[in-house]
Amino acid sequence: MFSCRMDHEYVAKGHFFHKGRMKVTVYKLFRLIQPGKVDAHNLDPLGQSHLVELSVVAPLGQEQIGEDMKNFAEQLKPLVVLEKFDHRKIQ
Image (cartoon, rainbow, N blue to C red; front, side):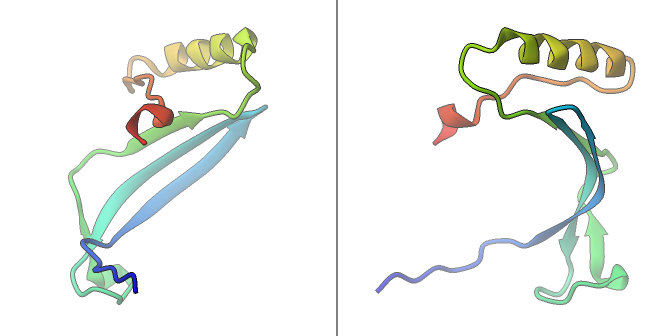
């Protein structure tokens, strides 16, 4: 038998945009004061910042997508610092 225990629970509130194949999410994280109860009075912000995530799914070796992402990140640079993150390396 496999059993799990919930360690933490959070809510992400924000916006989703797309530009071609790129997906951009801008959101703020909140923790639940009382677990399992999701309403506006039960949310406590985790920090004052918003998270910005830029992602794309592309075939291996497609350099143009990477260049498009880099150009998009440059447009946000005065307000947002985007860092490259490879999810495959943490698994």
